[in-house]
Image 1 (cartoon, rainbow, N blue to C red):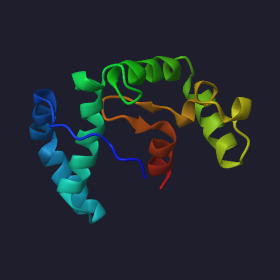
Image 2 (spheres, one colour; image 1 turned 30 degrees about the vertical axis):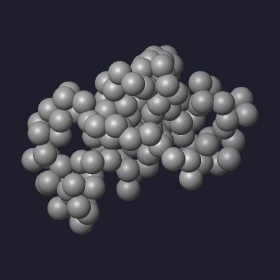
Image 3 (cartoon, rainbow, N blue to C red; image 1 turned 45 degrees about the vertical axis):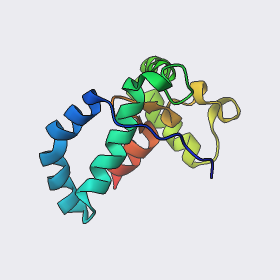
Image 4 (tube, helix red, strand yellow; image 1 turned 60 degrees about the vertical axis):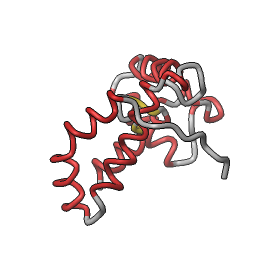
Length: 122
């Protein structure tokens, strides 16, 4: 596994953690997992959007914003059809991310669309 650089959470991320702690505690209790693990994982993804050290890195806000933009081109039916195609080992255009919106990570917590669909269906 490649070693990831370590940095402190940005102030905006610490605010995100404080704001979302009650919901994380409630969800973690329902899932039977640690609220710190749940919130820490989401906060780590959130931080990549606002960390100035990562702004032009492949994990940083600029690249993530492009992913959000690409995903927004597709409607919900197209995304769901793509999700089903990927599950059937038949992704669009050889599996390239821009042609497969279900594989894109989106939003402030950087969730992969296919993961969100899977969890909603579970």
